[in-house]
Amino acid sequence: MKKEGQSAGVKNIVLLALPQVQLLDIAGPLDVFTAANRFLSSHSHDGGYRVYLVSGTSEKVICSSSGMSLSCSHNIYDIDFPVDTLLVAGTTLCVLDKISPDLYHYLRNVKPEVRRLGSVCVGAFVLAKAGLLDGKQVTTHWKFADTLQKSYPKLEVNVNPFFICDKPVYTSGGVSSGMDLALALLEEDFGKPLATEVARHLVLHLKRSGIQSQFGNVLPEYEVMSPFTKDVRDLLKDKLGEIITVEYMADSLNMSTRNFSRVFVKESGMTPGKFLEKMRLDQAKNMLEYTDMSVDMIADKCGFSSSVSLRRIFLKNISLSPAQYRKAFKTTE
Image (tube, rainbow, N blue to C red; front, side, top):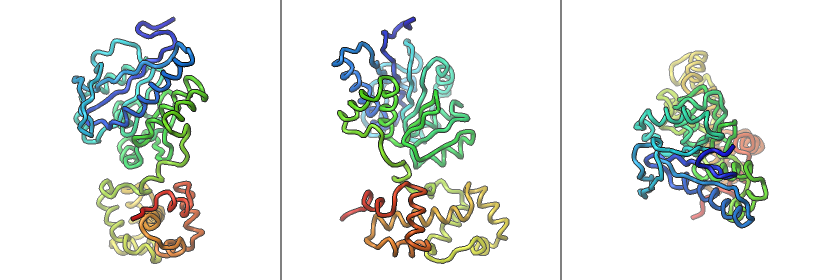
């Protein structure tokens, strides 16, 4: 039986916007869904999408992170139509602390009524705070993945995919990944041929190659590290080309090796050896981007036993070889 307010075959999509929303988090998925409507219409298909921009506050005019104002047709207090799919767009993390509890109450209430619930970028933090991601595998912007995992330990955060489907929840990575997710939802609804047609029209890959962590550091941002982890990082940053042992780290901080290892895992979420490997990998990535050093020289300066070892670490962590990474990200003057 057709739901009131929704035409046969038409799916109501809600893009939920918060203050300081990033425009592409909204505009990217919106362009995918509206382009799909044009192609469906040209094929005389009576289905498609009706997309609503909805404010997550009591105000219907939202100021985006770029300063451009967005006029929403509804807010969470006056939605008067059935929702098929709801996507929470990203914003700045500082905004999340100022959101009314009413938003989380609305999301918890609407979850049983929607077919799909998802997020773009750091919109995952909103769903997590509402308690809707517990036990789910999710993703978010690579820069904030560690913060999400530490803040909500009941989730399983995977930084690598551009989007993750753990039905009925769909989460996407940083900014443009919202378009990857929207294309996947389109393919799920109307098949691969239409999704491919829309992707070509928007000059996108239907399924983008690579992983998110290619674009950022493999270690968390320095600012979100604990003071103890920062001390270890500062101790090692100029010594990565040398032989470094856990005993050396512990002695430098006047700790026993056993106690140092225990405290370090508690503070950083990883072993000292894994942390050192990631530091070396980040330095190697930086050198590949900003220098013309050979891969052999970079491997030596970053403390890897050989270029073969460096290549193995690159493939394991970011699915690219050092040469492929340099080709993709080398900065030219």
